Length: 87
Image 1 (cartoon, rainbow, N blue to C red):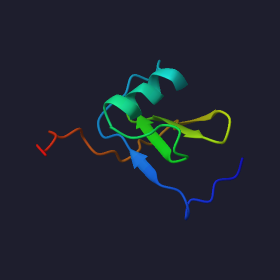
Image 2 (image 1 turned 90 degrees about the horizontal axis):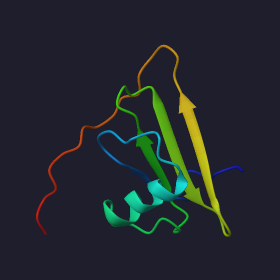
Image 3 (image 1 turned 30 degrees about the vertical axis):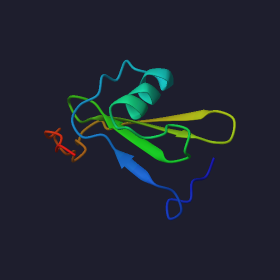
Image 4 (image 1 turned 60 degrees about the horizontal axis):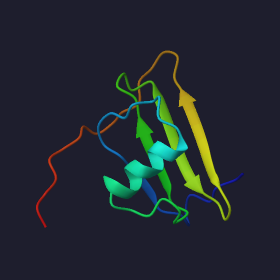
């Protein structure tokens, strides 16, 4: 699959995510914690504790894609989880 990154929304979940989680659990995080629609076609990106592993999920018409990227030497720059502002 080829994504046109200019035409889709990209959401980053700050802080760490348990990388044992797969598509179902990650989509629950998107829906319940990020308060977004996991089947919107947007790209959702999660990072591991040591910042060497990324997981991305996206919905495409009839199912989810799951991508994984692991760095051998470097670390991904990643925002820390902050406190949620009251609405």
